[in-house]
Amino acid sequence: MKIAVTITRVLTGVLFIFSGLVKAIDPRGLAYKMQEFFEAWAHDGFLPTLMDRFSDHALAFSVVMISLEVIVGAALLFAWHKKLTTWILLLLILFFTFLTGYVLFTGHIRTCGCFGDCIPLTPLQTFSKDLLLLSMIVFLLINKKWILPIARPSITVAIILTSTILTLFLQYYVLVHLPIIDCLPYKKGNDIAALRKMPLNAVPDKYEYAFVYMKEGKKQQFSVTALPDSTWSFVERKQELIEKGKNNTPLINDFSFTTFSGNDTTESILSKSGVYYILYIKDVASHSGKWSNDQQLIARLIENNQPVFIVTSQRNEVMSKIEAMSFKDKTPPIFTCDGTAIKTAARANPVVYKMNGSLVEEKFSWTDFNKLN
Image (cartoon, rainbow, N blue to C red):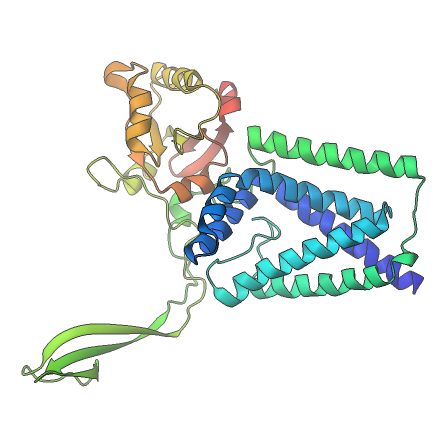
């Protein structure tokens, strides 16, 4: 029994630490996933006011949840307060199992983000993983007397404290700068234009169509191969998915540059030859740092005759800020893009991309604008 408990304890502790660290390299990613859950629950009518408030503090919840995973994982490995640790693990895994079950059985959310963007798992895989972990933690809880310390209390406390500090520092660093490991489609070296295209091995969804017509006050449904004569009046067309396709969604499918008049200029910009820059400013409210940093960056680029485009989800508000910077006739063009797409493309606010054609050469957070040559 002691050997079984030890093996289970090590696997569980390591998995929790790994899960926390994988998400710690991009805590905003988990925060955005939490917002999806809060929005889905609010939409379903479950305490909508409270869910909206939780959504506003999703980043804080993300940092706490990530840190807690690492701390309890390390505490389990070193048998630190084993009774408290195993109960916390049980509560965490029950919560995670509820989330993954919600994703799997409702379909309201595509993935749970349990291992961040670097290790994507299907809803069934994540739910199965949590059920396995639940059984392992229950086993540890029942047999906690065999969870024995492997170091002196002072050493254990020092390790737990160090783990906590390092995990918090890692999250702070990537929040101020950018994720140290970028697993998103917009990472350095990726070709945005190529990733907007349908994969070569895509299998489209198959639909069955039916047409509803009316005659003498009665409605009747017809197949596409047996439509009625002209004495019938068309009412509606019905579409039913009969076979789900595979790999038929581009990695980048919601990214676009829209002008003030509503024109889509994405292809025109991405097909530009040579170097140019894209400054992402998601919105005004969550803008970090100082607007003077943006002004200095834009001024440097204009001075060196480098094309620069501003992309935002709040065109009017950002335009007011940019126009107040007095670039005169050289004010960069401002385009609108979906806020969710900007969240994926820019894990800070603001972020600048150095582009070469449609290839991402470099990307910098607002704190690193001075590193841009």
